[in-house]
Length: 286
Image (cartoon, rainbow, N blue to C red; front, side, top):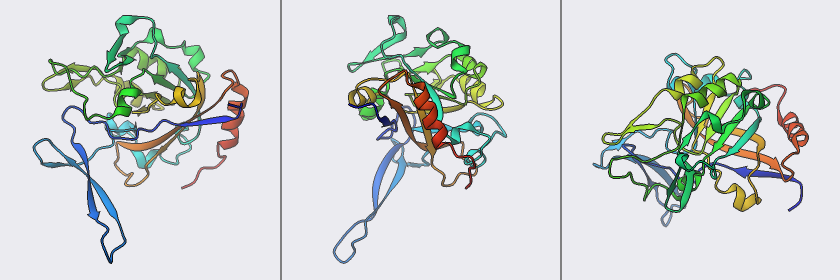
């Protein structure tokens, strides 16, 4: 492999459904048949009892808006193409690979996948180091579970899924470092507190999304394909987040396409900065 730019798509290929979320089922809307060459399909959310349920953005790669947890917070329509928000441009990103963290008490293994279940502040770089970046990406190793899909993803006997989560101290460090975005390879940053019925904490989102300016939350990225395809996991890169624009008014979150670009030489910060400068628009319209 040469020393040219490497670009990895970190977007999930599938929906990841657990708990009381509706399953996403694909249905033909206009099947192809003789005399009618057109094919159209659609998606619908269906509960276990067969009842229909509206689909949400939170069961695959998505970005949370402040409105998700903050009453009166910015919705997707207010954020998109708004130059006040760094997430609309490429972001210099610190990539933190926690899949081989040394403290076994923070780790869990599921179906042969080892991942960090609880991300704590002592695992993070200092505030001073993080201030060099626009975003922080936490790769716990759970992306390999996400990539497999949720067909066989079940809770334990007490109803716990053991999803990766971050502590309030992690959220506060992101705020103190003046980051624009925190990303994780799980569809939530919150910790499960109860099994049946399923309950989660709700104290991490408000710290991040309620800050001024907000620290946006990118959930459901997957880093499991980076090392097999690129040969290594970088410590930093240029992150592009492209949220779905349709029906943005009032949206608390949006499906997103996510790309991480980096170079073979992991210490080549200058080239990354040049790349970000080259791809950052002076004016943003739309």
